[in-house]
Image 1 (cartoon, rainbow, N blue to C red):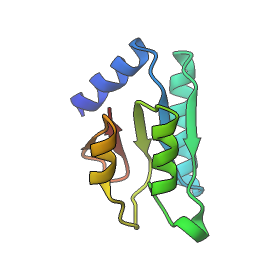
Image 2 (image 1 turned 90 degrees about the vertical axis):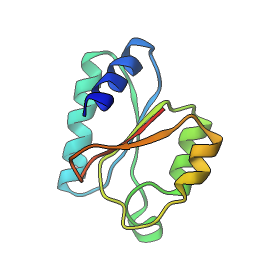
Image 3 (image 1 turned 135 degrees about the vertical axis):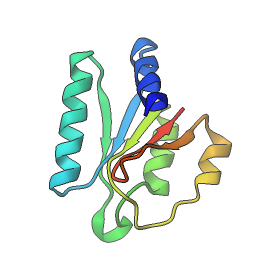
Image 4 (image 1 turned 120 degrees about the vertical axis):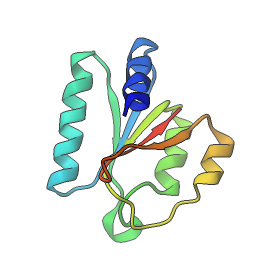
Length: 112
């Protein structure tokens, strides 16, 4: 958890781009709203993406990750558990993303 907290502080101090991948149910939308409110306090705008449930399933997917890479997102929060496998090695090779998971199984952080 300390790694994640330190990384969030660093992103705020460096004015880095932050993204959120959430879903459309109560826990996903509530988690996204809380994070957005938190970062608004620090005058940070976030880039929120919600996967297409019917076509993409839940969680991070290639379309969203490629979008975040294109937009130079430096820190990504995933606020759901992915039921679909994603090829993380591809993104780890082409970007400065480091994958970190904290003790909460509902939240993973992609740390750049």
